[in-house]
Image (cartoon, rainbow, N blue to C red; front, side):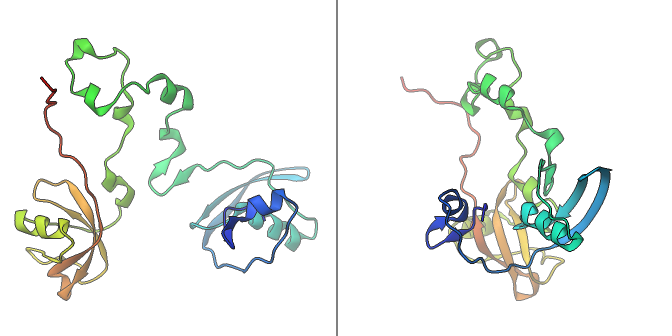
Length: 205
């Protein structure tokens, strides 16, 4: 019940906090591995690699039920989500201490900026989220057509014949997610990324 799943327009955890329990449908989840790292009396430390939508608290309860002793989560740490790891995260103190650093401030002369290094050195390009995906690059007209929601020619044709791909313009910037068509010779937009291109600051007179 203590999850963010919606039930008739409300989160389950909201209902649970009001003492309301509703029937939940079973869902299929993907568990790649469960490693027992430590056992100390009634406590065990597990490292779990699982797919999205897996509620580890429910998994702990299921494991406890299978063992006949019951089970609950005492402490939960998310070490990795896709290519992003906890060790690379920025602490809250760092975030709040450097919140004045913005893209605009980055373009200012060094003597006008804070001496403290900015948060932008920690920001990864958008394609980092889809690092394992194949990619295609479009020429100028193709990128323009893709940006307007139209299928674009892939020249040369993609190695893959179908499926989702990262789409980049001629300069290498990622402009969206596409789906290959026509045996890899065309790509149709699935998600289009709109972003301002880097340019010099132009301040009003």
